[in-house]
Length: 192
Length: 192
DNA sequence: GTCTATAATACGATAGAC
DNA sequence: GTCTATCGTATTATAGAC
Image 1 (cartoon, protein in one colour):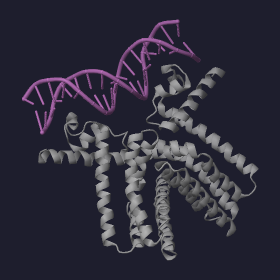
Image 2 (image 1 turned 180 degrees about the horizontal axis):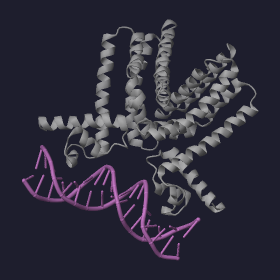
Image 3 (image 1 turned 90 degrees about the vertical axis):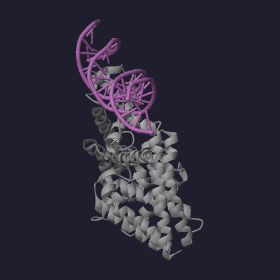
Image 4 (image 1 turned 135 degrees about the vertical axis):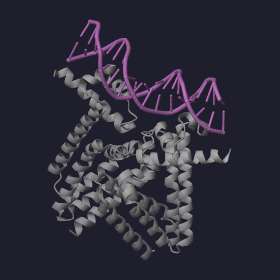
């Protein structure tokens, strides 16, 4: 595989990544992807065998990005409470994108949750990587047995905030919700 | 419009209602609908001008059903706290459907939230009817100014529970989540 | 009014020239 | 390896027979 080849492949993945988020997987056509990536029409099949293969590459790409981000947080933020608050803050910081296109992993999961078994498993990986990292933080905080449950609760609260904020196009609700999550984390840290 | 005509129309709406929930709007084709409703192929266009018109009819139908249900709850359940708990219980009672196909209004809203402005407004109506009814209960409980916010919070918590329960196919998480919501409502009732 | 046959289009995917 | 031309299919939608 040549260097140019690798670059083109990356351009396709980047374009698909954006489009799948903004428009959803099913509403994004090959024409959309090749136009955005500036790649000739049928050329995509040299790099990917099918649309689903592109999605798998997009998910791998997102997992790498998220993994790097979480590792960086683990390394540079010393207390688990602050790490959890960092997670909450990324929701607040992403307000415009969340109001426009929803949660990148939540909306993808919803799109495949209905019936597609294989892709349901793929999109679940995005939840898993956050779930495990969050559980790790709660465990370090002292909640050894409850860590998994608390992690799922935090994810659920975040998902709910994003959905309602998006439906009502209300950035204030998202802001107040994340503040409430910080208070919840603070209480958990206090009584650990 | 004849009586038979009206019946056929209703069969189409019922079939589409189920399919849009189970498979999603975009993944449901006319072929699916006419097969389920047992109506001849192109005949649908006598009743509806487009697929979107069918969706609007489906939403109207759901709004009527929900409206009737909420009115019944308002009439037969005397305390606002019990009414809110009734709302929470319908989530728990719907566990199998929610794990399979997600929230009927949440998943529909997500499907259109990405770009379709008109349909986004339509699906928002499903949130509105619950939101207003829930706010009414919180207001009767004594939370006059906070009623709207509490109503949105309850909706958000419910949406989050459903998304995470579905992704992890975990009925236990949904059950514990609804129990926690009951406790939350109970506290609010106590300190009202 | 009811239904069949079919148009028109957009899509994912392929074949084969260079 | 890269790209163009095109296929087959599924979809929404219509035209027109009865």
